[in-house]
Length: 85
Image (tube, rainbow, N blue to C red; front, side):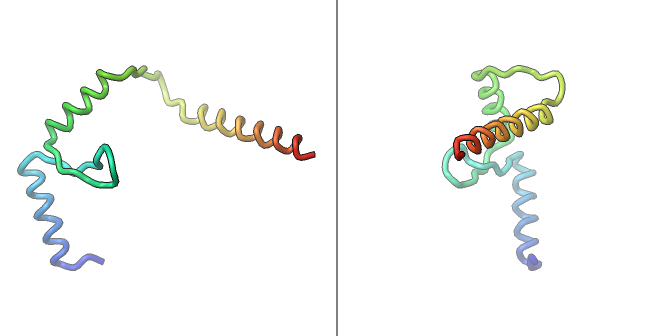
């Protein structure tokens, strides 16, 4: 449970981020975080999107992909089971 002082510090950090239009984000490399201005963050995202090929999907393919992965795992287990005989 957070103390009053911890809550006060967290709120001060949130206020500073909001006033400066900044966010906290996970760094690209390493296990660390960074503080970056929102506009700079948006620019990096847009640059990433424009430098990579993406296809807009018409619908949610999650269930199909999960089923395909499940089938592949099952098939691998069957092959492994047959080779253990």
